[in-house]
Image 1 (spheres, one colour):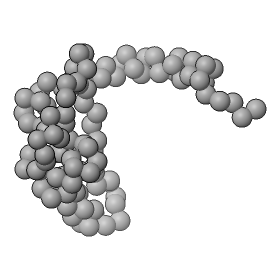
Image 2 (cartoon, one colour):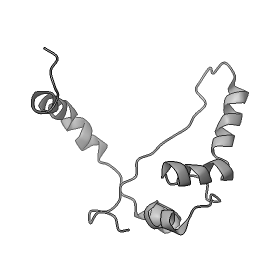
Image 3 (spheres, rainbow, N blue to C red):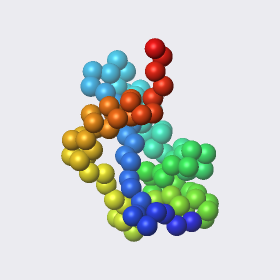
Length: 104
């Protein structure tokens, strides 16, 4: 399966232990569990998300369209957040006027 001609974009998903967490040790255990080979393999298989763990296993079918391996990761494009943030207010206003359904 080929991606768009513009290239594939990355969309970072993170998992973190927040500052002043009530149970930071337990939270860190959860983070480590979520990043384990087993769970990251399931993330790829069930959620169709590229795994973070390089030891995660996935089918050849998934490898064909998920960012898998160093070459695939290096080819990903990133969003131009300055451009997005500079235009966001106008886009939201236009969305509200042209697309959103008013409850009035």
